[in-house]
Structure formats: structure tokens, C-alpha cells
Amino acid sequence: MKIILASNNQNKLREFREILEPFGFEVVSQSEAGAGIEVEENGTTFAENAYIKCRAIYDIFKTPVISDDSGLEIDALNGAPGIYSARYAEPGKRCARVLSELNGVPDEKRTARFKCSICYIDENGTSHSVTGVCEGRIGYEKRGANGFGYDPIFMYGDKSFAELSAEEKNAVSHRADALKKFTEMLGGK
Image (cartoon, rainbow, N blue to C red; front, side, top):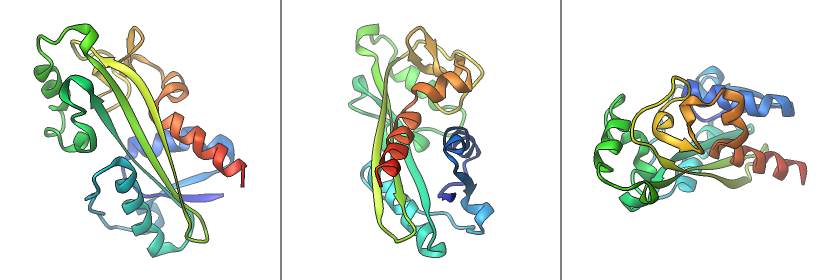
């Protein structure tokens, strides 16, 4: 089954392909499908932003579309960066900003989670939504060379997400949790 990912983010595209292709999905980015648009994410939740992106691409192609909006929520920062995770600082400086804001915060108060809301609009135009979560904590320095975004400072057990292999991360991540729920939802149809 071909499905359009309402994103051109190559890291997300790779993760969606790695997780969904074993279930028989052919995942293509919106630009590969021919949609060269940038959708404004003006929702107030991850779920709203995922729906906005998904609906915009579905309205162009009238074919199954999937999208996600995800980010990091840090308890000591009252849930920030949250839906502003991608805009919390300029690229390459987001981890540094978080580490700076958590300077002096003890380990037990560095709890955090990655959240991922996925919206799927089927061939009939009906939307479905699931949310995945991965609990962890924020480390004290960047560690690892894998992953992207906040992965080098997000600790899952004694390793950062950027220290995990793609297989390890795809087994436990917020996106993997949401995509597992998504595939279970499709199986129930």
C-alpha cells in the first residue's frame, strides 16, 4: 500500500520507512509525490499540527496520507519546548539551549518525554489519530552520533537516543510507539 508522508524531513522519512515497510507500506515524501508546499503548523497540540499537515496533503492527492508532529516535553521547563521543539532555537543550537536552561537542575528533576502524534487520513478522507510516548530524562551533555534533533541529550536508560542503533531506537521511540498503535489500528479495520 502506497502512503504519502506529509513531510520532506529526510530523518522522519527514513524512520517511517524503516518502521512501516515491513508492514507492506511504500512510504513516499510529499515532494516525491509532487507536493512542493510548506504547510503552516499553527495548531496548539501535536495532534492538531499532525492533522493540519495531513489534511493539506490529502486535499491535493485524495489518497492515503500520514503525518506526525512530535517533540520533547521537559518537566522542569513546564513542558517546553513542546510543540515548539523544532523552533526552540536555531538548528544546531537546540540541545545547547536545553542544557543551558537545565544548568543546576538535579537528575531527579530532569524527567522528560518525547511525544509523537500521528494522523492518518484514509482513501475515503476519514482521519484517524494515535499518540506515542517515550519517557526518559535529559542528560548533562550531548552523547552519541546517531539520531537527530534532541536525541544526543535524551537519555533512555543509561544511553542517549543518539547512542542507540536505528533498530534499538525504532523499538522504543515515541514514533515507534505511535506507529505500532497505527498499524494495530489498521489491523482492526
